[in-house]
Image (cartoon, rainbow, N blue to C red; front, side, top):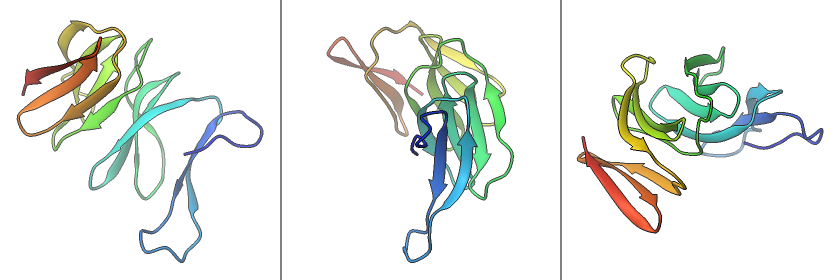
Amino acid sequence: MNQPASKKGWTLWKAPRSGGAAPTLLLSVQAGRFRSFALDANDIYFIDYYTGLNKISKNGGAVTNIAYADEPGNFLVADDERLYWLKDEVLTATCKDGSSSQALTAETYLTEDLAVDDSGIYWTQFYQVWKIAK
């Protein structure tokens, strides 16, 4: 992910793990501003400042907006079923198809990181680590 020389928008590149081949442009967002992204076997999920939570196939193609947010936050993590992100300063779980968004906390301020494992969702706030069981 980088910003073009024009300083407008962002681009996301794909390169083979083994190297050798030149990277290919996967996505270019002219007016957007990437915040974070997460992967699963088939898709790349990303937060864009202007449109919220989105996804694109790892093979390229059209971007699908999953959920809009006025303030989409800077962190996104994924497990097998859901995406966890800050939607308008609230820790939110959203199914990967965009259905069943669920607020997990009241407002969170100054969140500095977000993680997920089999038992819970973790975030840092005000120099403390917080956890919610899944």
